[in-house]
Length: 493
Image 1 (cartoon, rainbow, N blue to C red):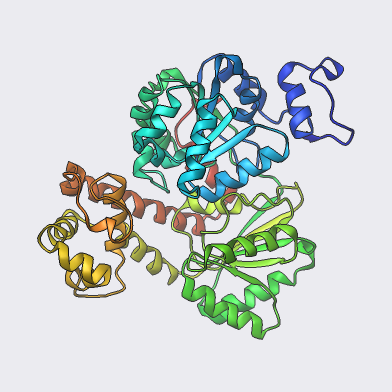
Image 2 (cartoon, rainbow, N blue to C red):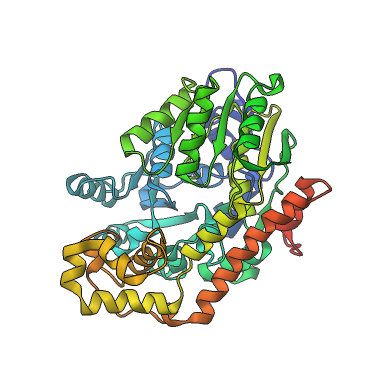
Protein backbone atom coordinates (compact mmCIF):
# COMPACT_ATOMS: atom_id res chain seq x y z
CA UNK A 1 0.00 0.00 0.00
CA UNK A 2 1.15 3.53 -0.73
CA UNK A 3 1.12 5.93 2.22
CA UNK A 4 -0.74 9.23 1.92
CA UNK A 5 1.18 12.41 2.61
CA UNK A 6 -1.69 14.91 2.29
CA UNK A 7 -4.65 15.34 4.63
CA UNK A 8 -7.40 12.76 5.04
CA UNK A 9 -10.62 13.45 3.25
CA UNK A 10 -14.23 12.43 2.67
CA UNK A 11 -15.56 9.11 1.40
CA UNK A 12 -15.82 10.37 -2.17
CA UNK A 13 -12.35 11.88 -2.56
CA UNK A 14 -11.39 12.02 -6.24
CA UNK A 15 -14.17 9.57 -7.08
CA UNK A 16 -12.42 6.67 -5.33
CA UNK A 17 -14.59 3.57 -4.95
CA UNK A 18 -16.02 3.08 -1.47
CA UNK A 19 -13.41 0.60 -0.17
CA UNK A 20 -10.51 2.72 -1.40
CA UNK A 21 -12.00 5.85 0.16
CA UNK A 22 -12.34 4.07 3.51
CA UNK A 23 -8.71 2.95 3.20
CA UNK A 24 -7.65 6.55 2.60
CA UNK A 25 -9.86 8.06 5.28
CA UNK A 26 -9.03 5.71 8.14
CA UNK A 27 -5.60 4.27 7.28
CA UNK A 28 -4.01 7.00 5.16
CA UNK A 29 -3.22 4.79 2.15
CA UNK A 30 -4.14 5.64 -1.44
CA UNK A 31 -4.27 2.10 -2.83
CA UNK A 32 -4.52 -1.50 -1.76
CA UNK A 33 -1.57 -3.88 -1.80
CA UNK A 34 -1.50 -7.20 -3.67
CA UNK A 35 -4.84 -9.00 -3.62
CA UNK A 36 -6.33 -7.06 -0.67
CA UNK A 37 -9.01 -5.38 -2.82
CA UNK A 38 -9.99 -8.71 -4.39
CA UNK A 39 -10.28 -10.35 -0.96
CA UNK A 40 -12.43 -7.50 0.36
CA UNK A 41 -14.80 -7.72 -2.62
CA UNK A 42 -14.94 -11.50 -2.18
CA UNK A 43 -15.99 -11.47 1.49
CA UNK A 44 -18.32 -8.48 1.05
CA UNK A 45 -20.12 -10.63 -1.53
CA UNK A 46 -20.67 -13.23 1.19
CA UNK A 47 -18.00 -15.71 0.07
CA UNK A 48 -15.51 -17.48 2.35
CA UNK A 49 -11.77 -16.83 2.04
CA UNK A 50 -8.49 -18.33 3.22
CA UNK A 51 -5.73 -15.71 3.18
CA UNK A 52 -2.05 -16.66 3.40
CA UNK A 53 0.00 -13.47 3.38
CA UNK A 54 3.47 -12.61 4.73
CA UNK A 55 3.68 -11.07 8.17
CA UNK A 56 3.33 -7.30 8.03
CA UNK A 57 1.74 -7.23 4.57
CA UNK A 58 -1.73 -6.11 5.69
CA UNK A 59 -3.89 -9.18 6.39
CA UNK A 60 -6.01 -7.31 8.94
CA UNK A 61 -7.08 -4.72 6.35
CA UNK A 62 -9.00 -7.55 4.63
CA UNK A 63 -11.58 -7.69 7.44
CA UNK A 64 -11.23 -4.17 8.88
CA UNK A 65 -12.39 -2.45 5.68
CA UNK A 66 -15.52 -4.66 5.47
CA UNK A 67 -16.24 -3.73 9.10
CA UNK A 68 -16.25 -0.06 8.14
CA UNK A 69 -18.84 -0.81 5.45
CA UNK A 70 -21.31 -2.40 7.86
CA UNK A 71 -24.96 -1.41 8.07
CA UNK A 72 -25.21 -0.74 11.80
CA UNK A 73 -28.94 -0.13 11.53
CA UNK A 74 -29.16 -3.90 11.10
CA UNK A 75 -26.84 -4.33 14.15
CA UNK A 76 -24.14 -5.94 12.01
CA UNK A 77 -20.79 -6.86 13.54
CA UNK A 78 -17.43 -8.26 12.44
CA UNK A 79 -16.22 -10.76 15.03
CA UNK A 80 -12.47 -11.42 15.16
CA UNK A 81 -11.02 -14.51 16.83
CA UNK A 82 -7.48 -13.77 18.02
CA UNK A 83 -5.15 -16.06 19.98
CA UNK A 84 -3.41 -13.59 22.30
CA UNK A 85 -4.78 -11.00 24.71
CA UNK A 86 -1.82 -8.65 24.20
CA UNK A 87 -2.17 -8.89 20.41
CA UNK A 88 -5.88 -8.02 20.37
CA UNK A 89 -5.39 -5.18 22.85
CA UNK A 90 -2.70 -3.63 20.67
CA UNK A 91 -4.86 -3.99 17.55
CA UNK A 92 -7.94 -2.47 19.21
CA UNK A 93 -5.92 0.43 20.61
CA UNK A 94 -4.52 1.15 17.14
CA UNK A 95 -8.01 1.04 15.57
CA UNK A 96 -9.48 3.34 18.21
CA UNK A 97 -6.72 5.89 17.54
CA UNK A 98 -7.90 5.90 13.92
CA UNK A 99 -11.46 6.60 15.00
CA UNK A 100 -12.69 3.05 14.35
CA UNK A 101 -15.33 1.68 16.71
CA UNK A 102 -13.60 -1.48 17.96
CA UNK A 103 -13.36 -3.33 21.28
CA UNK A 104 -12.23 -6.59 22.84
CA UNK A 105 -13.58 -8.98 25.45
CA UNK A 106 -11.01 -11.06 27.29
CA UNK A 107 -9.79 -12.03 30.76
CA UNK A 108 -7.98 -8.70 31.24
CA UNK A 109 -11.39 -7.11 31.98
CA UNK A 110 -12.72 -7.36 35.52
CA UNK A 111 -16.33 -8.40 36.08
CA UNK A 112 -17.67 -4.85 36.11
CA UNK A 113 -15.80 -3.92 32.93
CA UNK A 114 -16.88 -7.14 31.20
CA UNK A 115 -20.57 -6.62 32.00
CA UNK A 116 -20.36 -3.02 30.79
CA UNK A 117 -18.73 -4.18 27.55
CA UNK A 118 -21.41 -6.85 27.09
CA UNK A 119 -24.11 -4.20 27.55
CA UNK A 120 -22.50 -1.96 24.92
CA UNK A 121 -22.27 -4.83 22.43
CA UNK A 122 -25.91 -5.79 23.06
CA UNK A 123 -26.95 -2.16 22.48
CA UNK A 124 -25.41 -2.25 19.00
CA UNK A 125 -22.10 -0.51 19.69
CA UNK A 126 -18.87 -1.48 17.89
CA UNK A 127 -18.15 -2.55 14.34
CA UNK A 128 -15.29 -4.88 15.31
CA UNK A 129 -15.17 -7.12 18.37
CA UNK A 130 -12.02 -9.12 19.21
CA UNK A 131 -12.25 -12.25 21.39
CA UNK A 132 -10.34 -15.47 22.03
CA UNK A 133 -12.07 -18.72 21.02
CA UNK A 134 -12.18 -19.71 24.71
CA UNK A 135 -14.76 -16.93 25.25
CA UNK A 136 -17.35 -19.14 23.55
CA UNK A 137 -17.39 -21.34 26.62
CA UNK A 138 -19.29 -18.54 28.42
CA UNK A 139 -23.11 -18.72 28.06
CA UNK A 140 -23.50 -15.00 28.93
CA UNK A 141 -21.23 -14.10 26.00
CA UNK A 142 -23.32 -16.23 23.64
CA UNK A 143 -26.45 -14.47 24.91
CA UNK A 144 -24.92 -11.09 24.04
CA UNK A 145 -23.90 -12.20 20.54
CA UNK A 146 -27.44 -13.43 19.89
CA UNK A 147 -28.51 -9.77 19.83
CA UNK A 148 -26.19 -8.97 16.90
CA UNK A 149 -25.89 -10.10 13.28
CA UNK A 150 -22.40 -11.49 12.71
CA UNK A 151 -21.78 -10.27 9.18
CA UNK A 152 -18.23 -11.62 9.00
CA UNK A 153 -16.19 -13.97 11.18
CA UNK A 154 -12.44 -13.35 10.92
CA UNK A 155 -10.15 -16.08 12.25
CA UNK A 156 -6.75 -14.47 12.84
CA UNK A 157 -3.62 -16.64 13.09
CA UNK A 158 -5.66 -19.38 11.43
CA UNK A 159 -2.88 -21.95 11.70
CA UNK A 160 -4.07 -22.27 15.33
CA UNK A 161 -7.24 -23.89 13.95
CA UNK A 162 -5.35 -26.88 12.60
CA UNK A 163 -4.39 -29.69 14.93
CA UNK A 164 -1.18 -29.85 12.90
CA UNK A 165 -0.58 -26.08 12.98
CA UNK A 166 2.59 -25.02 14.77
CA UNK A 167 0.66 -23.15 17.47
CA UNK A 168 -2.23 -25.56 18.05
CA UNK A 169 -4.96 -24.31 20.39
CA UNK A 170 -7.67 -26.90 21.18
CA UNK A 171 -10.42 -24.26 21.43
CA UNK A 172 -9.65 -23.26 17.85
CA UNK A 173 -10.72 -26.76 16.84
CA UNK A 174 -14.28 -25.85 17.90
CA UNK A 175 -14.62 -23.42 15.00
CA UNK A 176 -17.27 -25.48 13.17
CA UNK A 177 -19.37 -25.51 16.35
CA UNK A 178 -18.77 -21.78 16.89
CA UNK A 179 -19.76 -20.99 13.30
CA UNK A 180 -22.96 -22.98 13.79
CA UNK A 181 -23.76 -21.01 16.96
CA UNK A 182 -23.28 -17.82 14.93
CA UNK A 183 -25.58 -19.10 12.14
CA UNK A 184 -22.64 -19.86 9.82
CA UNK A 185 -21.52 -16.37 8.83
CA UNK A 186 -19.18 -15.53 5.98
CA UNK A 187 -15.73 -16.51 7.24
CA UNK A 188 -12.23 -15.28 6.46
CA UNK A 189 -9.26 -17.23 7.85
CA UNK A 190 -5.89 -15.46 7.86
CA UNK A 191 -2.32 -16.55 8.55
CA UNK A 192 1.25 -16.02 7.40
CA UNK A 193 2.07 -19.72 7.73
CA UNK A 194 0.01 -22.66 6.58
CA UNK A 195 1.26 -25.60 4.55
CA UNK A 196 -1.05 -27.28 2.04
CA UNK A 197 -1.74 -30.04 4.57
CA UNK A 198 -2.45 -27.51 7.30
CA UNK A 199 -4.87 -25.61 5.03
CA UNK A 200 -6.89 -28.76 4.33
CA UNK A 201 -7.21 -29.33 8.06
CA UNK A 202 -8.24 -25.69 8.61
CA UNK A 203 -11.10 -26.08 6.10
CA UNK A 204 -12.26 -29.22 7.89
CA UNK A 205 -12.08 -27.60 11.33
CA UNK A 206 -14.06 -24.61 10.04
CA UNK A 207 -16.73 -26.94 8.68
CA UNK A 208 -16.47 -25.38 5.22
CA UNK A 209 -16.04 -27.61 2.14
CA UNK A 210 -12.77 -26.88 0.35
CA UNK A 211 -14.72 -26.00 -2.82
CA UNK A 212 -16.60 -23.27 -0.92
CA UNK A 213 -13.57 -21.36 0.39
CA UNK A 214 -11.20 -19.57 -1.95
CA UNK A 215 -7.50 -19.47 -1.20
CA UNK A 216 -5.68 -16.17 -1.69
CA UNK A 217 -1.97 -16.94 -1.41
CA UNK A 218 0.49 -14.05 -1.68
CA UNK A 219 3.51 -16.34 -1.44
CA UNK A 220 6.13 -15.86 1.23
CA UNK A 221 8.80 -13.87 -0.60
CA UNK A 222 10.02 -10.63 0.99
CA UNK A 223 12.64 -9.31 -1.47
CA UNK A 224 14.29 -6.98 1.07
CA UNK A 225 15.04 -9.79 3.54
CA UNK A 226 18.40 -11.55 3.39
CA UNK A 227 18.15 -15.07 4.84
CA UNK A 228 21.45 -16.33 6.21
CA UNK A 229 22.31 -19.48 8.16
CA UNK A 230 25.69 -19.57 9.89
CA UNK A 231 26.88 -22.79 11.45
CA UNK A 232 28.44 -22.26 14.89
CA UNK A 233 29.87 -24.43 17.67
CA UNK A 234 29.16 -23.42 21.25
CA UNK A 235 28.49 -20.20 23.13
CA UNK A 236 31.78 -18.46 22.33
CA UNK A 237 31.25 -18.87 18.60
CA UNK A 238 27.69 -17.57 18.92
CA UNK A 239 28.75 -14.54 20.96
CA UNK A 240 31.40 -13.60 18.39
CA UNK A 241 28.80 -13.92 15.61
CA UNK A 242 26.27 -11.79 17.50
CA UNK A 243 28.82 -9.07 18.24
CA UNK A 244 30.16 -8.89 14.67
CA UNK A 245 26.62 -8.80 13.26
CA UNK A 246 25.52 -5.98 15.57
CA UNK A 247 28.55 -3.95 14.47
CA UNK A 248 27.84 -4.48 10.74
CA UNK A 249 27.39 -1.00 9.25
CA UNK A 250 24.97 -2.31 6.61
CA UNK A 251 22.29 -2.93 9.23
CA UNK A 252 22.75 0.08 11.49
CA UNK A 253 20.04 2.71 12.14
CA UNK A 254 17.37 0.28 13.18
CA UNK A 255 16.25 -2.21 15.79
CA UNK A 256 17.34 -5.78 16.51
CA UNK A 257 15.56 -8.84 17.92
CA UNK A 258 17.69 -11.79 19.06
CA UNK A 259 15.59 -14.89 19.75
CA UNK A 260 16.41 -17.64 22.26
CA UNK A 261 14.60 -20.90 22.98
CA UNK A 262 15.46 -21.04 26.70
CA UNK A 263 15.25 -18.29 29.32
CA UNK A 264 18.39 -19.57 31.08
CA UNK A 265 20.37 -19.33 27.81
CA UNK A 266 19.00 -15.82 27.22
CA UNK A 267 20.13 -14.74 30.70
CA UNK A 268 23.58 -16.26 30.19
CA UNK A 269 24.06 -14.48 26.87
CA UNK A 270 22.74 -11.23 28.32
CA UNK A 271 25.49 -11.23 30.96
CA UNK A 272 28.13 -12.05 28.33
CA UNK A 273 26.96 -9.32 25.94
CA UNK A 274 26.88 -6.72 28.71
CA UNK A 275 30.48 -7.63 29.56
CA UNK A 276 31.32 -6.87 25.91
CA UNK A 277 29.66 -3.45 26.15
CA UNK A 278 26.56 -4.36 24.12
CA UNK A 279 23.55 -2.65 25.67
CA UNK A 280 20.14 -4.34 25.38
CA UNK A 281 16.88 -5.21 27.12
CA UNK A 282 15.45 -8.65 27.91
CA UNK A 283 11.94 -10.01 27.33
CA UNK A 284 10.62 -13.41 28.39
CA UNK A 285 7.57 -15.04 29.95
CA UNK A 286 8.97 -15.17 33.51
CA UNK A 287 8.99 -11.38 33.78
CA UNK A 288 5.99 -9.64 35.40
CA UNK A 289 3.38 -8.45 32.90
CA UNK A 290 3.94 -4.75 33.66
CA UNK A 291 7.70 -5.11 33.12
CA UNK A 292 7.13 -6.93 29.80
CA UNK A 293 4.86 -4.08 28.72
CA UNK A 294 7.50 -1.45 29.66
CA UNK A 295 10.19 -3.32 27.73
CA UNK A 296 7.98 -3.66 24.66
CA UNK A 297 7.08 0.03 24.80
CA UNK A 298 10.77 0.98 25.09
CA UNK A 299 11.56 -1.15 22.04
CA UNK A 300 8.64 0.21 20.01
CA UNK A 301 9.52 3.83 20.85
CA UNK A 302 13.19 3.38 19.93
CA UNK A 303 14.48 3.89 23.48
CA UNK A 304 15.87 0.35 23.33
CA UNK A 305 17.46 -0.78 20.06
CA UNK A 306 18.30 -4.39 20.89
CA UNK A 307 16.05 -6.91 22.64
CA UNK A 308 16.99 -10.45 23.68
CA UNK A 309 13.74 -12.41 23.70
CA UNK A 310 12.04 -15.76 23.76
CA UNK A 311 9.20 -16.37 21.33
CA UNK A 312 6.89 -14.74 23.90
CA UNK A 313 7.97 -11.50 22.18
CA UNK A 314 6.75 -10.62 18.73
CA UNK A 315 3.02 -11.12 18.28
CA UNK A 316 1.61 -7.65 17.74
CA UNK A 317 5.06 -6.05 17.39
CA UNK A 318 4.58 -3.95 14.26
CA UNK A 319 7.77 -1.89 14.04
CA UNK A 320 8.91 -0.79 10.61
CA UNK A 321 12.68 -0.43 11.11
CA UNK A 322 13.72 -3.81 12.51
CA UNK A 323 16.99 -4.31 10.64
CA UNK A 324 18.05 -7.64 12.15
CA UNK A 325 16.14 -10.67 13.39
CA UNK A 326 18.63 -13.18 14.74
CA UNK A 327 17.97 -16.70 16.03
CA UNK A 328 20.66 -17.54 18.59
CA UNK A 329 19.00 -20.93 19.13
CA UNK A 330 17.20 -23.15 16.63
CA UNK A 331 13.42 -22.54 16.34
CA UNK A 332 11.13 -25.55 16.66
CA UNK A 333 9.60 -25.32 13.19
CA UNK A 334 9.82 -23.61 9.82
CA UNK A 335 6.45 -22.01 10.64
CA UNK A 336 7.80 -20.39 13.82
CA UNK A 337 10.98 -19.30 12.04
CA UNK A 338 9.02 -17.67 9.24
CA UNK A 339 6.63 -15.89 11.62
CA UNK A 340 9.60 -14.42 13.51
CA UNK A 341 11.71 -13.31 10.57
CA UNK A 342 8.58 -11.66 9.15
CA UNK A 343 9.02 -8.91 11.75
CA UNK A 344 12.13 -7.65 9.94
CA UNK A 345 12.20 -4.92 7.32
CA UNK A 346 8.57 -3.87 7.22
CA UNK A 347 9.70 -0.49 5.90
CA UNK A 348 10.96 -2.22 2.76
CA UNK A 349 14.64 -1.54 3.48
CA UNK A 350 17.34 -4.19 3.48
CA UNK A 351 17.23 -6.38 6.59
CA UNK A 352 19.10 -9.44 7.81
CA UNK A 353 17.56 -12.66 9.12
CA UNK A 354 20.44 -14.61 10.63
CA UNK A 355 20.11 -18.06 12.17
CA UNK A 356 23.10 -19.24 14.23
CA UNK A 357 22.82 -22.98 13.71
CA UNK A 358 24.39 -25.18 16.37
CA UNK A 359 23.39 -28.83 15.94
CA UNK A 360 23.38 -29.33 19.72
CA UNK A 361 20.39 -26.93 19.91
CA UNK A 362 18.27 -29.60 18.25
CA UNK A 363 18.32 -31.53 21.54
CA UNK A 364 16.53 -28.61 23.24
CA UNK A 365 13.77 -28.63 20.65
CA UNK A 366 13.46 -32.43 20.82
CA UNK A 367 12.96 -32.08 24.57
CA UNK A 368 10.26 -29.45 23.96
CA UNK A 369 8.48 -31.90 21.66
CA UNK A 370 8.54 -34.56 24.39
CA UNK A 371 7.11 -32.10 26.94
CA UNK A 372 4.41 -30.93 24.51
CA UNK A 373 3.22 -34.47 23.75
CA UNK A 374 2.36 -36.55 26.84
CA UNK A 375 1.19 -40.05 25.94
CA UNK A 376 -2.09 -41.66 26.96
CA UNK A 377 -0.49 -43.37 29.99
CA UNK A 378 0.67 -40.00 31.35
CA UNK A 379 -2.77 -38.42 30.93
CA UNK A 380 -4.29 -41.46 32.65
CA UNK A 381 -1.93 -41.11 35.62
CA UNK A 382 -2.65 -37.37 35.93
CA UNK A 383 -6.42 -37.93 35.96
CA UNK A 384 -6.12 -40.89 38.38
CA UNK A 385 -4.00 -38.81 40.78
CA UNK A 386 -6.54 -35.99 40.75
CA UNK A 387 -9.44 -38.43 41.19
CA UNK A 388 -7.98 -40.56 43.97
CA UNK A 389 -6.01 -37.89 45.87
CA UNK A 390 -7.93 -34.61 45.44
CA UNK A 391 -7.12 -33.29 48.93
CA UNK A 392 -3.37 -33.89 48.53
CA UNK A 393 -3.40 -32.24 45.08
CA UNK A 394 -5.12 -29.14 46.45
CA UNK A 395 -3.03 -29.08 49.61
CA UNK A 396 0.44 -29.71 48.18
CA UNK A 397 -0.02 -28.45 44.62
CA UNK A 398 1.56 -29.15 41.24
CA UNK A 399 5.06 -29.75 42.59
CA UNK A 400 3.75 -32.63 44.72
CA UNK A 401 1.95 -34.05 41.68
CA UNK A 402 5.06 -33.72 39.57
CA UNK A 403 7.13 -35.71 42.08
CA UNK A 404 4.65 -38.59 41.90
CA UNK A 405 4.17 -38.58 38.15
CA UNK A 406 7.77 -38.61 36.99
CA UNK A 407 10.80 -40.23 38.48
CA UNK A 408 13.48 -39.20 36.01
CA UNK A 409 13.50 -35.40 36.05
CA UNK A 410 11.64 -32.80 38.08
CA UNK A 411 12.24 -30.40 35.20
CA UNK A 412 9.96 -32.43 32.92
CA UNK A 413 7.12 -30.11 31.80
CA UNK A 414 4.59 -32.70 30.64
CA UNK A 415 2.33 -31.94 33.61
CA UNK A 416 1.99 -28.30 32.50
CA UNK A 417 0.98 -29.49 29.03
CA UNK A 418 -1.51 -31.98 30.45
CA UNK A 419 -3.12 -29.37 32.71
CA UNK A 420 -3.41 -26.93 29.80
CA UNK A 421 -4.94 -29.52 27.47
CA UNK A 422 -7.39 -30.82 30.10
CA UNK A 423 -8.50 -27.26 30.81
CA UNK A 424 -9.00 -26.39 27.14
CA UNK A 425 -11.08 -29.53 26.64
CA UNK A 426 -13.26 -28.61 29.65
CA UNK A 427 -12.19 -31.60 31.75
CA UNK A 428 -11.00 -29.49 34.71
CA UNK A 429 -12.38 -26.27 36.18
CA UNK A 430 -9.50 -23.98 35.20
CA UNK A 431 -5.86 -23.65 34.13
CA UNK A 432 -4.37 -22.85 37.56
CA UNK A 433 -4.58 -24.07 41.17
CA UNK A 434 -6.90 -24.73 42.86
CA UNK A 435 -9.35 -24.92 39.90
CA UNK A 436 -7.07 -27.18 37.88
CA UNK A 437 -7.48 -29.96 40.46
CA UNK A 438 -11.27 -30.13 40.07
CA UNK A 439 -12.47 -32.61 37.43
CA UNK A 440 -15.80 -31.43 36.02
CA UNK A 441 -16.24 -33.63 32.93
CA UNK A 442 -15.29 -37.01 31.50
CA UNK A 443 -12.07 -36.74 29.46
CA UNK A 444 -12.72 -37.04 25.71
CA UNK A 445 -11.35 -40.09 23.85
CA UNK A 446 -8.36 -38.16 22.47
CA UNK A 447 -6.59 -38.45 25.85
CA UNK A 448 -6.77 -42.25 25.66
CA UNK A 449 -5.92 -42.52 21.97
CA UNK A 450 -2.21 -43.32 21.73
CA UNK A 451 -2.34 -43.37 17.92
CA UNK A 452 -3.77 -39.83 17.81
CA UNK A 453 -1.26 -38.51 20.35
CA UNK A 454 1.65 -40.25 18.63
CA UNK A 455 0.64 -38.79 15.26
CA UNK A 456 0.70 -35.26 16.65
CA UNK A 457 4.16 -35.89 18.12
CA UNK A 458 5.35 -37.23 14.76
CA UNK A 459 4.13 -34.07 13.03
CA UNK A 460 6.02 -31.93 15.55
CA UNK A 461 9.18 -33.94 14.85
CA UNK A 462 8.59 -33.54 11.12
CA UNK A 463 8.44 -29.76 11.47
CA UNK A 464 11.71 -29.74 13.41
CA UNK A 465 13.28 -31.84 10.66
CA UNK A 466 12.14 -29.11 8.26
CA UNK A 467 14.52 -26.75 10.09
CA UNK A 468 17.37 -29.22 9.57
CA UNK A 469 16.55 -29.31 5.86
CA UNK A 470 16.46 -25.50 5.74
CA UNK A 471 19.88 -25.32 7.38
CA UNK A 472 21.37 -27.71 4.83
CA UNK A 473 19.68 -26.07 1.82
CA UNK A 474 22.34 -25.26 -0.77
CA UNK A 475 20.10 -23.25 -3.07
CA UNK A 476 17.83 -20.26 -2.53
CA UNK A 477 16.32 -20.53 0.96
CA UNK A 478 13.35 -18.42 -0.08
CA UNK A 479 12.59 -21.01 -2.74
CA UNK A 480 12.80 -23.68 -0.05
CA UNK A 481 10.22 -21.77 2.02
CA UNK A 482 7.94 -21.45 -1.00
CA UNK A 483 8.11 -25.20 -1.59
CA UNK A 484 7.53 -25.91 2.09
CA UNK A 485 4.41 -23.75 2.38
CA UNK A 486 2.89 -24.18 -1.07
CA UNK A 487 3.64 -27.89 -1.42
CA UNK A 488 1.74 -29.51 -4.24
CA UNK A 489 -1.26 -27.23 -3.72
CA UNK A 490 -2.24 -25.26 -6.82
CA UNK A 491 -5.47 -23.62 -5.68
CA UNK A 492 -4.04 -20.23 -4.78
CA UNK A 493 -5.15 -17.01 -6.42
